[in-house]
Length: 282
Image (cartoon, rainbow, N blue to C red; front, side, top):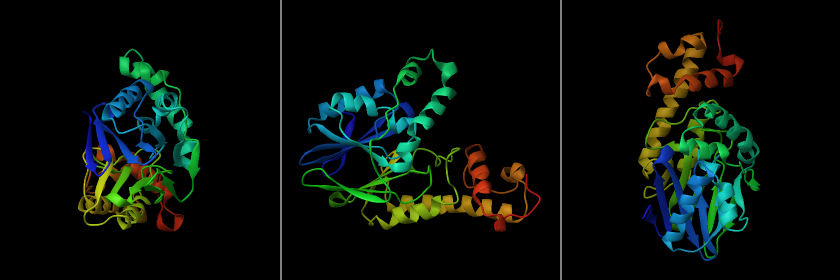
């Protein structure tokens, strides 16, 4: 059984393809599914696993952000469960199609690979129910909170809080199986403060489900927040000293491998105000 229970009526399945987590939360009216995997074909496998769980029918879907590996299964879930609402932050929903098409373009030369072919054939279905700051979803006898804590991995990250089980589903704001995803749409200078908001939602006993990897605890999130903070402050220091962006990766000690940080440095330099930069910069 791919799904394992991490708290009362909260199950997580960790799928090998992209090492992505899908979470199911049961309420009195049915199941809330958080993230839908990386293609329609992969999502149909998830749907089979949800049905095998025998916990009820899906009544709503949540996307933690717009990236393909968390949203490309939306259409399959809506087909299987009668156009259930798909919830996301308003910015994530607006960015989903463009973000997905960019990723498809990157994989176009791998169309001969079976799983990639399925990904490329997937219709991109963005969320149809959005919010700006926070919203509570009623799933019967249970309220589930969606909170946009700020920018970090993307512009439109959200976390899902299940208060009665002390569980927080953090999406890719927290990653356990590798370094944080500093991609071309990340916000490395905002990310530490965003995780401060996430930490304010946690207790010492909270179970935190990352977007990728095994569930973690509050101490793990604190450590990752502090390490991302080191990345942000190193970028700020280099820019303040006038180190050109092209030389920044080689000009400092970094807490993560530098092959994961090229976008972080570029984006950090772009986002710093002019008052925190010293010429010459390139």
